[in-house]
Length: 320
Ligand SMILES: [Zn+2]
Image (tube, rainbow, N blue to C red; front, top):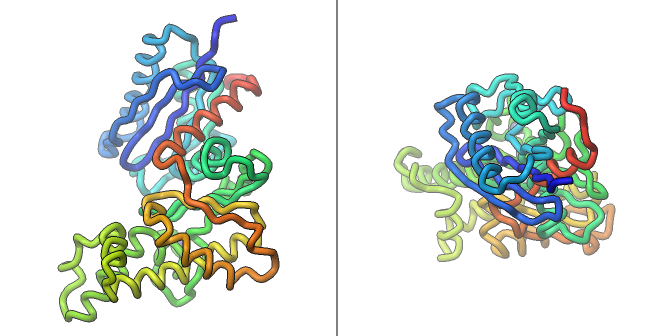
């Protein structure tokens, strides 16, 4: 029997990563390109699938299965991308059916945080732990629960969404419709917004004057001892420790793995966060919960998508 290839696709709001792997787990080919969201889902998916066809032609091997990580909300059973905020126009988009029709192989779809969590669990910071809670802090905050090598999905694959737990009932309105979600405060967007607001209040200027401030520039300012940035950062840690502390109390994972752009701050984030979480979590021995930075970086999503693809190949799912 000829060697079967698995394809992994990581679709993001700004970039797409595609990779092929053989059954021994060896990376055969990969490609990355920007997501031109204005082109709409059909053209974007066609570009992805053509890239896979080209890579397959180069290797001469047959495709066995495809795994896809995509921003949620998604409907796993029906293989639909429902309407992610960072993928405008993807409304009830039948992604799985489209890929299955093109290639005639089993296709598994999961949301991007779940895929990244699988990547970290099997190949990154989560290796060796029985279960883990994964959180990604970037433009938004996503989360996922891995138990004994499997994602806990819950209703509409919505489990683990720590970014939309309410940590300040009187806080800022969130894009999800609630108020004071962790994401509004501690995401990259939330960190930059609070810094702009503080500077405008201190200096009497308009918030717009500070639009060039990002979470990254806030982190730089903390490192150079800027008092305003330090206050924003301390508040970020305080609220992350509430949200993640609650998640730890509910899930009791052996490890919490933190990914996303804001996690690039490293120990500036993790050191004080471990300490604050230690004070908030009282019902379990917090020293038995490792709080770690993700190690795969932007590769976690496509690694997870390949794991999803391998699971589809092993299960030998029937094509609909
Ligand atoms: Zn929310």
